[in-house]
Length: 413
Image 1 (tube, rainbow, N blue to C red):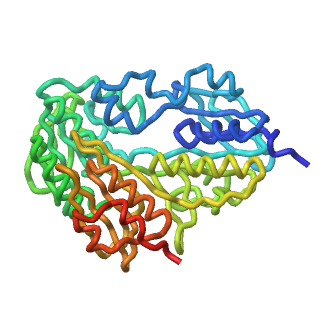
Image 2: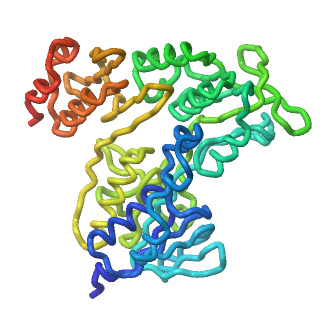
Image 3: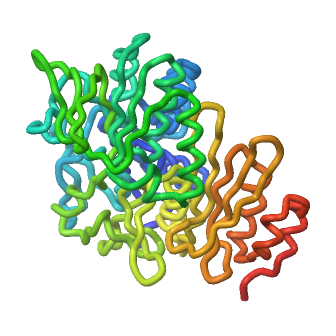
């Protein structure tokens, strides 16, 4: 019988989930070979700072990396960089790599992440000056185009688009955000949170156009010059930053005969239909309620990777999602806990100074919080959401109510 602690593990994808899986395996005492296959030339690095501190020039490249190069040598994690997996032979438990090599595995982890939805060429998506924000190459390409006075079109009013808009406006660029939905952040936040960030961006000179779609980008000699919008207007632009969502990288799994449905389908232990193959991070679709859910967050990637590592060494963990997210825009830090979808009530709580938080309820139960520059409210609400307790909404709304006192709310039974 194979000793799980000595199995050969191969991880495809060197992002947050892939790196965390390898690190956790070693921390849990796994002694067998570990190979980490990554498409980029860089060793694993943090991605959230790319659209924030790194783009602003406040974080150097070396600070992005999770660990120094020596770590991978010391922990015997075999890095295959600038390499992709081109096929999985499940029967032979062998992988084909883009460099022509093959790798055998006893446990395989798919941490293939997701990729940005791109604009088609017929509406100008191939013009020079069109950028996306997903990896280090994207951030470097955009940084090279940022010059004082440049005109920036941001397509998409989600968190990625608004973070990029904040960075560009902070550097003195002229920014227009175009959002097809009736309001920015409509898919992920309440009208109250949307209104907060509308005002924040307006005060910093960012122009916002909601209920407006991009019709096509305009260019001369292959270079972006502007855009036509659905309201009939034309705007000038030197740079377009596109943030209209992502798609999970599930094609490798699908070609291998694994079940996919907006992500690689896994069970509560992050295991696919093949007992030797797991999936974690942005690419994984896990059981949630009556269906499946895919989360795109650092917290989800870390938590799922830890579950995968424990399962590989023979434990029987269950993934219990405790979602948390954050976004930095100008001088505002937004911290989010829980999932607000399906809420039927939003309660506002004023904090110190400009701090404010929005508490989401569904049928009287606290399910999520958006906290702007209010880390105390965030931490209290996060603890309550995780333990299933729900404070009285009127008490939450009263600024005289002590936050710590809210923790006395009874847990769900």
